[in-house]
Image (cartoon, helix red, strand yellow):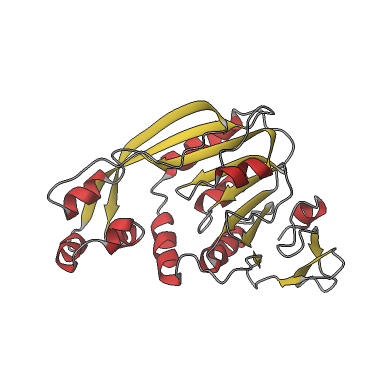
Length: 286
């Protein structure tokens, strides 16, 4: 957890919504409310600000995703994401990656925008443990991580210049609350043919992906770009890719085993990148 982020007084106590600051011993965060609440920092550096007993992705799922992303398979999306944000005239505020997982995009954004504080938020402590360790390994100094629910972000109103929502639930009313006027929501989701080759290897009939139903309605869309290319995934990363998809839970063992026997798999990766701006006239859809 970076001191620079805490100095901005935008990270809030999930209990009383008072600003959080570093404790005297440096091992946790404490709020400035009338009744002081404290939150320990993990050894890797993230803080758990989730009050509800809900867990995000499991340790095995996070490890599989991290192992897959270490091969940099979605570099085309990562590069397009940074380029798209570079073209924006951002107001004051932090960059928030809402639903950041293991930090594949978050740490890259922090490296690309060193003049901004970057915060990754996710419900999985296992994912954020990996993300925090990767940030330390690569010496990314302007990124922090917090376990929290995307519907109840522990952030001050209008504190975010840019909010990235990549393959994660879109909580429009909460995102609009934390976005500054003139701030941007970068909304990324699977395109129609995403992982087409993987689906062809698993199923007899393959269908295009349906359009996202939770697309923002109260923010102004300013751009839409589709990014698509074919990648080759080699064993054992085929199994790791499969494990991070919803198909993993809806495929028979026999079909899955046939997939695991492949030495390599060619598949399309297909991404939709939509950018929305919060304007003073915009009101979130409730």
